[in-house]
Length: 213
Image 1 (cartoon, helix red, strand yellow):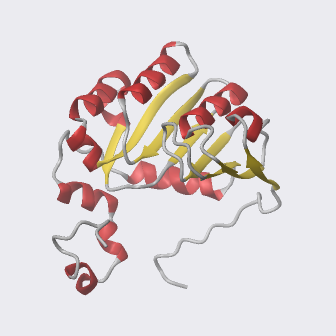
Image 2 (cartoon, rainbow, N blue to C red; image 1 turned 180 degrees about the horizontal axis):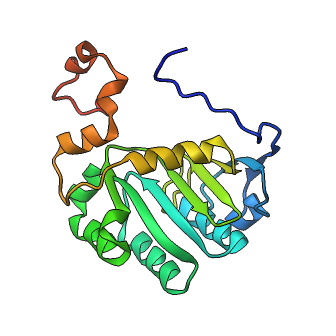
């Protein structure tokens, strides 16, 4: 086993698992949020990650929330601010790709001002993840869907408790709080992406956009 692999055991190995094809809302697709649940869903984009988070909040009550996303828009910031004002969330952490801050510096700064300077973790990420937790629930959502509506095939996994939630929490806690509008090298170091490849491999792609074919 590679030393970079971090195996984790769990008492949740016998989860109550469900797999669904959904043409309905987040509430109808996800259903009750129960201890030890595990749901895999394929949708046609009828709801977004934000809708899924909102449903989980309706199930577990007031909670802390963290969101990992590649990009964020004004609507999403306003929704989370509304959640904070009406008491649905006690705090919101945003894990965001550096490119998003380059495109929407004022928006990311607004999140800092509303939720706290330490509630934005800038890095290099394309992950779509959300954590919702209380004193009794630890819900992890991850999938292909963005925060916004997108009528395409999307997939979503939701679990309550277990090592997957702990792993994301651990990585999130290790991310440093970088200064606004940081350099790419700072975000890259924070993300430790260079550790995933040999130096000789990385040199092949210097100066090339990562999505170039």
